[in-house]
Amino acid sequence: MDITQTVISLSESVGASGNEENAAALALSMLRNYCPDAEIRNGNVIGHFGIHREGLPSLVLDAHIDQVGFIVTYITDDGFVKVGNIGGIDRRLLPAQPVVIHGKQDIKGVICSVPPHLSSGSSKVLSIEDVAIDTGMTQDELYQVIAQGDTVTFDVSCRKLIGNRITGGAFDDRCGIAALLYTLELLSGQDTAYNVTVIFSTQEEVGERGAKIGAFSLAPDIALAVDVSFAYAIGEEESKCGYLGKGPMIGLSPSLSREISDKLINAAEATGIPYQKEVMSGLTSTNADRYSVSRSGAKTCTVSIPLRNMHTPVEVIDMSDVEMTAMLLAAFIKEG
Image (spheres, rainbow, N blue to C red):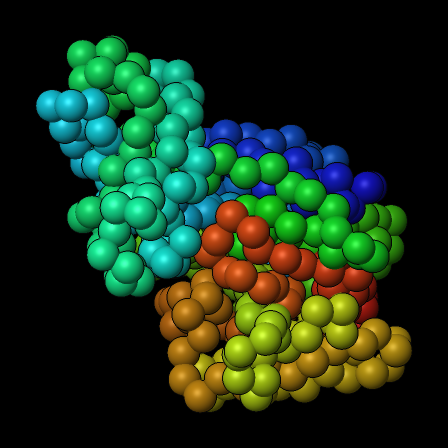
């Protein structure tokens, strides 16, 4: 598979939390290449890999399909669209951002920005209540094509940077989905130490809701949540970040299984796959938190892809990290 093109295609598909249908349909078509029984169940994309064998522990590979965005709250008399946030939007970058409103048809717009000549000179960050989208349409025209509750996403396309790096939106967590697909590619035709189920879960950005449903219905013995985490950039605290191009970040936390963390580290070292450690002092704020405590619990760990500029239209990843994440997962699944 062309893993870079897979990331780009997934990233550019639409799927804010609660409205993931388009992105889920694309991911489903990709997953069926490896899991012919894959289906959409309660919004989640779920497929079983290979032949189920009695006596093997069950393993779930999870990556979330949704992205951050906005929801239309109302339309003003003079034709501006007001919104609320879906997930943790970085409000510092909102003025002048191009967006797409997903109504009966897609409507492009721009978030209003006060020119510096007319502002007081202060650098006040917009509150979400102050955000308004200008489409150039009147209130009556807008009522014909959009409605309260429609979702809005950033209007962004991916671009390749120098080396293996690319920038775009929704890499959180579409690059995780691509990593899981590539994992299945690497495992095709090989024996595994687990009965493997893949889930691309919904609504992670609003409380890991899809994973909560998936964890209850699948009840795995082991769960690996593949997500993104912070890659170091100028001005950030290095001790809290990983680095682009240095491999997947293996989670270590009191809320995770140290047994699984150690097995992932051993798998990386045995196969010479570069990796990084991500130490968290409590919950992980990923879908792993849902699997750990569902029903009788699952041995759970996180494997994260380093990413810069999280929850913005210009997220940056290094494709080598996506590939190495898949290689690590494949090594872990083959050896157990």
